[in-house]
Amino acid sequence: MPKNGLLDCIVCAERKEAAEFPGFSITKTCSHSPQTCLDCVAVSIRTDLTTKLWSEVKCTECPELLGHDDIQRFADFKTFQRYESLSFRSALSESENFLWCTSGCGHGQVHEGGLEQPIVTCMLCNSRSCFYHKVAWHENMACSEYDAFLADPEKFRSLYDLQNEEAELEAEARRRQEEDDREYARKLMQEEQQAAVLERAKEEDRRRKEREAKEAAAKRERDKIGEEKKQAAARRHAEDKLAQATILTTTKACPKCKAPIEKNRGW
Image: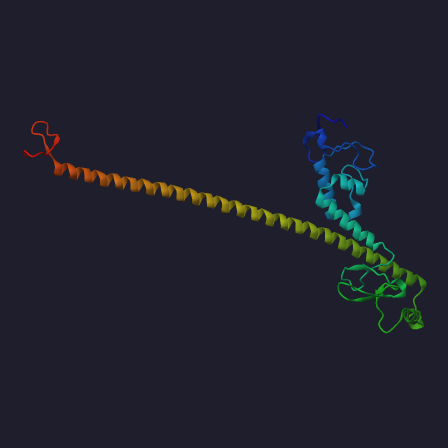
């Protein structure tokens, strides 16, 4: 891809500088030159993490999946944090000692006791599950007794039925994990949006208060100047009256020109 010149983004259809496009393939497995601008690639990653599983983020131009390094390179900081959080939760669930709570509360945890301590107490809802059977804890029965109960002729189920039940439990656990991941991503997005609205409201209130303070200060200054002008006018008026009174008491009109002249002893 040329380092200089203008290119058209196939997503936003805007013409931008070549520097605003990826300098190489979006993923290591992409076989095409990138025609999507960096802004649109970041938006695509953020959207995929909100609407899909964390592992289903794809290239904007082909079906190739983005890896950890690709998302770190092109996603914004908050999106990458969300990606790492979701991938970490998924990695935990793949641990051989990880168990989803069988009560359906949506919480899962690593059970360090393993098969030697099969009772798993959920840290969220305190429900107890059987680590070995992946079901709610069978009260008053050890795991071996529960196996015998399952093998009772009156309650007999074939090996196929048992395997099918186990497969259904695993599929349900995967579905719950996927639902939890989607809900977690949705809540993170909602919290970010709410925080942005609150921040905008705070900024608008701050600006309003600053504007009102400036207007109030300007009004006080105008009032002060107006009051000073009134006082100056009042002083001039008083001085004029005093001068007129002095003229009346100390002068008389000239017989010829009528101009006021000072009185003397000959009056």
